[in-house]
Length: 184
Image (cartoon, rainbow, N blue to C red):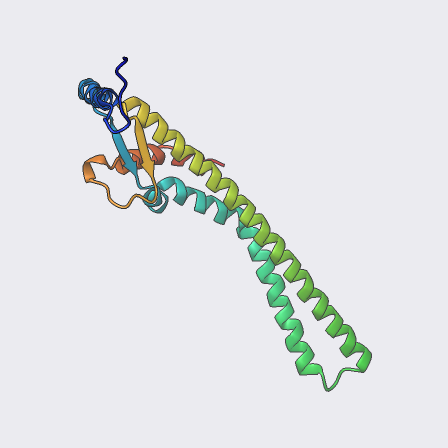
């Protein structure tokens, strides 16, 4: 008669194999070099970066002339409305209606141009933000490769020990590129 294992007897071989596997993995992990991990606070880079300051300055200069032209048009509209109110009693109906139509047309034109300016500014802000974000990511990657980091975390980190924080090093590298945006 052949000996068979009964369903009530536990099989010890798979459990022993699992223990041996875990012990083997632990020994391999003990021999492997330590994983280098770092954290970068990208919001701090955005707030403190000379690159972002240069970008804001560039956009301010780029849109200043158009904004000034709109401000002059708005002043003209205020003058037109004030004239309409002042002279309402002495103007003929046809003149009063012509003045009202001119004021309304100018108001619509200003609103349309203001919306176009806002859309153009938003487009340029998005382009600039993408450029700067790409630069930050490039600098993080280059620094991580140079320093031998295997993992660099950004954003939404609940806690980080100061020795893992490489934000200052990345901020210096990003600031080195601020001159690129200051050039015309």
